[in-house]
Image: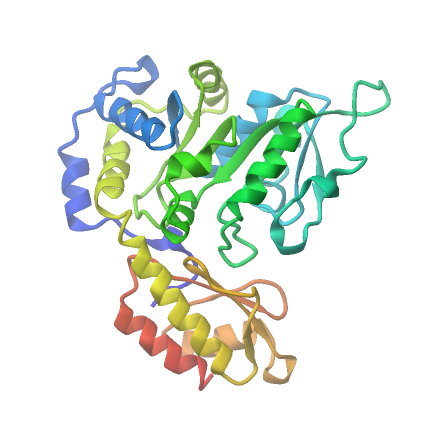
Length: 338
């Protein structure tokens, strides 16, 4: 049982069949019909004009940053977000963009936290151009950002002349958990990235979504990053199959995650890191009396379960379509014994 990440899902037999049968063309020339269909579908689902298929979520986010910032510009983000923590400061390496991370209780930025943070055109400072958010929030246990808070902070950012980009790698989970439409969740943002290779279970791929003008420019940046693929419809078919067959079933992953969270809260020396488990990520705090997170992960591994140790006392378990309810019930029992 592998609960390290929802990126560990493997294509189902039916998905593989859909990929094998996909009509393809040269996507760099815009001639792959399956990629074109995926891009149109995703743009419509998110209520935006256009979308661009890219190899990875990191590439999608970095293109999003570049659409709004140039060298010497600055973006604002929450201090625990994926773009800041897990993408190797690519915005600095690739584009010469600075980042100003802002700590936020519960991972949700509010307008008052930006007091004095936005810098104008003074030659001594970088120019603040962009606000980035993440929904769901990975490091906060898959938390869904409160939509009213998102709207408030994005309205504030717009009033300051800042563009808004969302790392929506798991926005699908946010929609299922909140009951809000993808378009409603996407509405406050100029651009978004969404990922097909996590809970949806496709083998690869993400999309950048925005206006037609954004996506025309994004296509140029994708090319510069080496992200232009040829007969990419084989991958796009997996993403299309996932959207048609795996989206609603994410509710099962959320229910399985709640089972694990409740078991952990009842287990000795374990507690839920976040106040609640909303989606498919369970972040656990390990009491030092029981050892380190690596110790617990090792004991679980010996029992046939892989989890991820994040730091000295934190464990992460992620449910996905590759793990059944029965397997999660077994893990819940193990959390009481390890």
